[in-house]
Amino acid sequence: MILVTGGAGYIGSHTCVELIESGYDVLVLDNLSNSSRESLHRVERLTGHKVSFVEGDVRNGDILNVLFDTHDIDAVIHFAGLKAVGESCECPIFYYENNIECTLKLVQAMQDHNVKNLVFSSSATVYGDPQKLPLTEDMPLSATNPYGRSKLIIEEMLRDLPRADELTHSDNPWSVALLRYFNPVGAHKSGQIGEDPNGIPNNLMPFISQTAIGKRDCLSVFGGDYNTCDGTGVRDYIHVVDLAKGHVKAVQRLLSEQGLDGVQAFNLGTGHGISVLEMVNAFKDCNHVDVPYQISDRRPGDVAACYADVSRAQTELGWKAELGLADMVKDSWRWQSRNPEGYRVIG
Ligand code: NAD
Ligand code: UD1
Image (cartoon, rainbow, N blue to C red):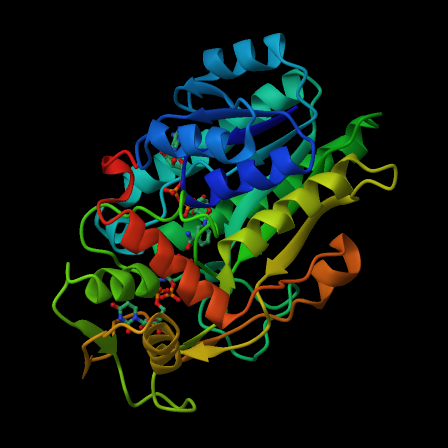
């Protein structure tokens, strides 16, 4: 059985589908602070399998102990965390407290129960302001905001676990995959599960979808004077279903005979950069909808371009993104148009 913390959220719910379809039993622990129970009902309908769900906080060690005592858990995928960059700048203590304490309590419970296979949701944000592209996993790391710093601190914390195993000659050493996501977008092709942001979206794709459906008047394109193909920011967008499959590959590797040695980081992206205008135009063309936009000032903290070298994930995990830009924009629109209020309307 795989314990999935934060499994009711955007990436977690898609990963539950892929895990179940790969034959794993799934146990979700989520406090529903940024998600709803409905996402998992839909995962159950999509897969025809039950998802064991516990509503609770990962910071609660007692809940974790009960879960490990009562279930046969082979590995943990740790999605639970807060992820809004702007909010993290306003409430850094809240972010450090939630993201770091969740991970500390989780690894303590794992160690106490001798379950030492972990997949951690990291982010391309740990590369800070990239000096060279594409980004490889061994490039220098830094953080430009408390959210990113929480990921960086957790990565460093996790690196200490196998070091301790060496000192204590552990016969069951830690195996940890740090998955550094680039820009997850899209939704399950059924249109049943997808991203359901609270309030005004910060990220590009949900803002485009909400503009296309008329919830927002106009997309602001943040900066038209970057040194990129068309002057707008370039990112490595990755379809959330590809990303979810990357987690299954990581779990399979952790549980394989070969295992995974210590802590290893993997970029999960496509390896291709796409500009804001390329994304907007693909969305319009593939979905036959209008997306009014205007070029506005650069957003503070944004970098011109960011994309991954994905060869390590391919070599080590046997994983490669398969879905392209057309799938990303079509699946995002299917989700948005069928669920204009997200999970708030049962459909
Ligand atoms: P999400 O907010 O949809 O999912 C996170 C889930 O964790 C939510 O269901 C939330 O209710 C839960 N949660 C938060 N704190 C919790 C706690 N203390 N106890 C129990 N549950 C808790 O976000 P997502 O987009 O699915 O992201 C999942 C993970 O991936 C996060 O750690 C995020 O930082 C990381 N990540 C996301 C992106 C992205 O663009 N979506 C990019 C890079 C990394
Ligand atoms: C953001 C986070 C990053 C996180 C990532 C994935 C910031 C500074 N960084 O990355 O930590 O890991 O999301 O969730 O928030 N854009 C517009 N108009 C909009 C929104 C975005 O033009 O309304 C542009 C941005 O300037 C950027 C691109 O679209 O060029 C992507 O932006 P976004 O989706 O917010 O992701 P990132 O900034 O790459």
